[in-house]
Amino acid sequence: MFYLLAEWFGFEGVFNLFRYLSFRSGGAIATSLFIGMLIGPRFINMLRMKQGKGQPIRSDGPQTHLAKVGTPTMGGLMILTSLTISLLLWMKPDNIFIWSCLFVTLGFGAIGFLDDYDKVRKASHQGVSGKIRLILEFAVAGFASWMIISKIGTDLYIPFLSGISIELGIFYLFFAMFVIVGSGNAVNLTDGLDGLATMPVVVASGTFLIIVYLAGNAIYSDYLGIPYVEGAGELAIFCASIIGACLAFLWFNAPPAAIFMGDTGSLALGGALGAIAVSVHHEFVLAIVGGLFVLEAASVIIQVFFFKRTGKRVFRMAPIHHHFEQLGWPETTVVIRFWIISLVLALAGLSTLKLR
Image (tube, rainbow, N blue to C red):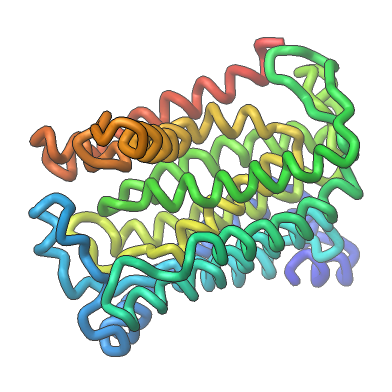
């Protein structure tokens, strides 16, 4: 909206600032942060009144979590509201990458909302069937991937190798779908402690803000040897909106949390990161930057695989953040140390831009 207004005024005077991604990205962070802080208390009160007992707490989990009974969930609605409003205000409306990623974000958010609602309604941590969730997620990811591929083609680029790609054809569509769905569920599994998923999402979004800006600039992408994607720089506005919205949410989600993100937020944010990575041909870099999410998902897969075959557990409890809690680590210790890991992995992911 702001960009169209500035364009209508011919980008004269102060309106010339709206040409620059850096200015609009800063504005997007500030806007989503302000909106999130403004609506946060109202959302928390509304959800607390409507949900009563709040998110069900697993009885087989760490006993310290029982003190969280009554905390409302679906805080992702607050994130999605501030993110979407900020994005619509600062984006260029003719950018297909923005609309594709927003479609994934809101689509996965809706799926997560149905799951959260079912859990609260049944007062159980078992929500919508996993099969139904995956079918819906792949449907959303499939449509978005098709839109993205129509602009970027079907080449798969490998980190550390400059200008080398593999033409996958139709198989790239399925690969992109897998990246988006896998990212969404990995972040969803990470969201188990107060603030644990939120800050790593902020770190990953900040990292991809840099990546999409460079990939969308022909000069910088040529210098770094990364694939140039025309129009991808506009996704910096998307990343910035995520950062602001998540920081506002973290204000209320910091221990002791006044609200939980729920699947509404974690699925949406994970899906958004996956869609952004696909849009700029940096799917493998997402696995590095979001390595914490990969670790959390892998711990669940390993636990289930070995338990079904041997009857024994590799970890005391999965996802792996609960394993460290069972070892006696305080929740805040687990969260802060995992934040540090996410920051280190983000720096490692950024290094792939030059190591080619």
